[in-house]
Image (tube, rainbow over all chains, first blue to last red; front, side, top):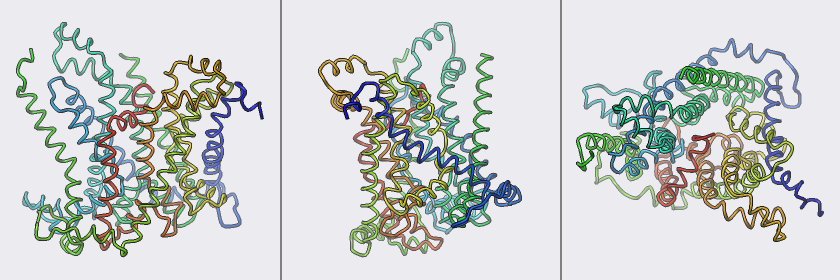
Length: 294
Length: 280
């Protein structure tokens, strides 16, 4: 047993847990997803059916509903959750700002709640009854009671508000930690050259925030397309009226788990993976090109 | 230049952030308020933000600690067990891997690190169907092992520990060898204590993730006495809105421990959650 203590073997022992986990819980499932997407998986018998699963998806209306919902959700979360936290982080980082660590914590607290608890609160706040919080708010402006989760537009609105509430704080923390690593001398020398606040923001802050922005956009695209729990809780299970809350993962869950059709579910997973990867490559390319211009 | 302590711009900013903080904390107020109202009231009229002191009581909380809500206690216990076991296992294994990748040069090192990054990039949800099949094959379905094992060696903490260990002086390694420590002794006796701040950050982040995790446990666990807190709570969410007594007070009790930990260990949250954000 002495060999296990040798210096040459030790690193392999250290990384062994990852290699094992990678093989059993990652590489195998990924390959198996690809394989299963071309199969009909039935208990006891599994056979290849070529592109049939993909063709079924292509013809399935709920696939387009899910893809469109997930895309809209991802789009709106990107529109809100990149510029807003960026600006708020710049404010919090300003020298003249008071109590910024308190405000940072207050905005961060929602991140700690589980999606389940957050969904339960938002169901109550956006309830359909006359006395529900947001409906009384509408009454104050002379508008009537609505069923927030009953139609496409307000349903999506609730999802985006929920995402904003939960993630604005963590994104602020990302941007803040990047802002704090910008050397103060840069701003000082810009001031000597007569730059105003906007110029300093545009010429120093924004370009230096690019790496962290790319990171936040990347995880937001993956996160947006992976959204499932929010809609699962808001619409109590995977059943929203006319599938207004159906997401890609919701569809995968419906076919793969609820209807036990693992082949079709796997095909959805592959499409989703391809979709998010292509989007992220495009996104990285765009930013990469901007880089060369500078 | 900034002689005035409180100029107009500062005042405007503070007012803005007071409003934003109020918005961020408003849902917590709603939740707390709802937990103090009778569930029949919520069912009939929904939640309004008026205080209505005549309606408020701790009845929901006394109920949740009573025998009638025994299932809630079970969920809570299950979540605690899974969180503790998962976090402990994750810390031990991920720190080993991260340390190994940072401290040694060996064939395959870069490839393994690349795999860590790759696993980090692919959302878990995409591989959950074959993973579910795998759990059935390994006889881990409907067990805590099935919830914990697939993710106990987690890429994010590996990445974090690797970055952290890369910044530590390798001299300790040689010093330990000269003193006759084995390679593993060096890790456990010298480097683990040095990496305490990294463990602090990762314990908090991973425990939080495990406590709140939903999709995977939802798929793996099925029998009532094995459910975790988020799944148990979600099973009470129905289109008819009954069960409010356990649901709302239960949600409050689910987030209270996190809030307490957050108040005391805030800086660990921040350093742990921003992994990868700055300098990948």
